[in-house]
Length: 239
Image (tube, rainbow, N blue to C red; front, side, top):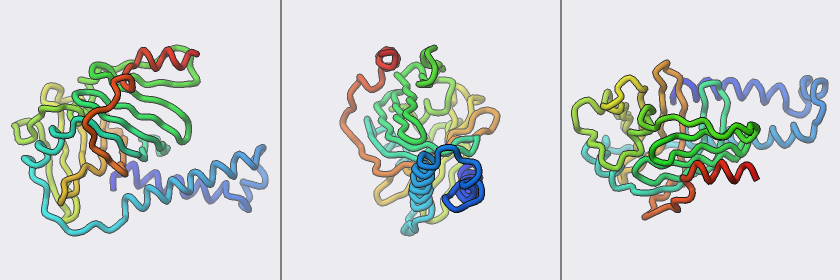
C-alpha cells in the first residue's frame, strides 16, 4: 500500500469519527446536518470499496515478467474501468476512466464532485467546473502517464524500468519515460494468470504521489474519440 493511501485511511477515519451523527462535532458544528449525513454515507462507502480492493486476499502467483508486461500493455488498445484515487493532500476521489492508445485518457470524477481530466494524446487538460477560465493544459510527454499510455514502449529496454519486484501475489514495476527521466515515475501493479493491471501510482519530480486503484477493468477494441476532445469538453461546460 502506498504511503499516500495509508495516510488517507488514517485521516479519513479521524474525520468520519468526528462528523458522524452522534458525535460532538456533528451536533455542535454542522449547519446543514442532512447534507453532512449524505456525505458521511458516501465517504464510508468509498472507504469500504478501497479497503476491499486493497486488502482482499489474492491467490499466490508467479511474478509477471517485463516481456509479458510489454505484451499486455501494448495489446491494450482501449479500456474502461471504475477507479478510486488517493491524492497527495489525503483527499479521495472516485469515478470512471477511459483509455484509448496512444496517449488518450479521460477521468470522469463522480465523488466528491463532477470534475474532469482529459488527455487528447498531446495535452493533459484539467477542468475545474467552478472556474470560467477553461482547462489547465500540460504537455502529456512531461508526465509519467505518457509511459502508461504508450502503445509501443518496450519495458525490457534499457532506461525504462527502475525497479521490479513481486510479493508472491502482485508484481510492481517502477518505470520512467526514457525521453524525460526527470519527469517523475509511474509504479504499476499487476496480477497474473491472467495478467491484469490493478493500480498505478504517479510520483511527480517532488515525490508527491497520486494513486489510482482500478476495479472492473474492461479491455475494449475502441472508445469513442469524442471522449478525448478537450476543446469540445470545455465548450460543453460553458453551456
